[in-house]
Image 1 (spheres, protein in one colour):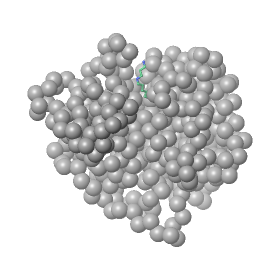
Image 2 (cartoon, rainbow, N blue to C red; image 1 turned 180 degrees about the vertical axis):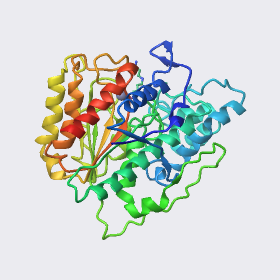
Image 3 (cartoon, helix red, strand yellow; image 1 turned 135 degrees about the vertical axis):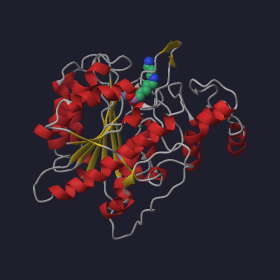
Image 4 (cartoon, protein in one colour; image 1 turned 30 degrees about the horizontal axis):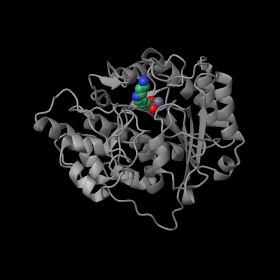
Length: 403
Ligand code: OKP
Ligand code: ZN
């Protein structure tokens, strides 16, 4: 299996975070990825590491607003230029929906954009977000990893057509993405890598991806402008239906939000509940308008969920859920968090203790009724048991390959 990876994802390395009144080393650390990479490297007969290509900012703009990306790109330097501390940029005052609700939103935004702290408050929702001089480089690279993996998935699908083999690729990237929506960062996430890949798979043909793909040569001084071709959405090109299976411990509020009104993307999340991000993840969130019914939240009690209970829920939704069966996805995207493991320092289901559960998750993504025969794109999300991550990731991927 191809694993798309870049060392540049390790450069975003904030020195600390403030969580529940405690200052501690940044939990979403470069060591996470390096640990997975080491484990992958130890199995050269199964995995092949490849570098990401560059597809420009254009496909990222299909998910994120331009002013938001501009903010991500410039905030660190703006902040330092104002004489503020150089270690990391964090939130000071967040634009809570109920705190300034009498002010016209346009006027509020005009005021907020005047200062770096105002901009952070406008575009960030929690204290896990910290910008360093290299944050944009790692964030941009992570998105390009997801795009490269999506491109490779279609290439492989084409190559495999006659062989009766199912394509799968792993995008090993950080920072993660599933808490970020079109215009707000949070939960260690800046750009929603999985969502960017989903839109790319829907809006571009393999031929268009081939044309766009360039070597990735990042220059942080580059102004951020869209440069790749815009997708031509013709009526004779039916939109691909994509099912996202988010197995990260946390609810992917960002991914849910991006596709909430969209009936061509079915979002399924299994997550600890109630827990971070505290304002979403209820089973009552089912999508809206055209998208109604195409959002499935499976909240699980972190104290009592065991390996069996977890697998039972995943099996039921992928095998028996009528909406999922009728949706009949063309492609599966797995938001692959590894923080369900019982020892996870910030998350974890207390009763999820068997590594083979991860192998079975991979197996379900291969052979369950709603997944069988469909290519799967694995995108790395969370997971914080540094020493264990490589093993957990590989068990999922081997479960897919060997089932
Ligand atoms: C990101 B991902 C808990 C601190 C929580 C943010 C958690 C973000 C999780 N003590 N801070 O979904 O793994
Ligand atoms: Zn998580």
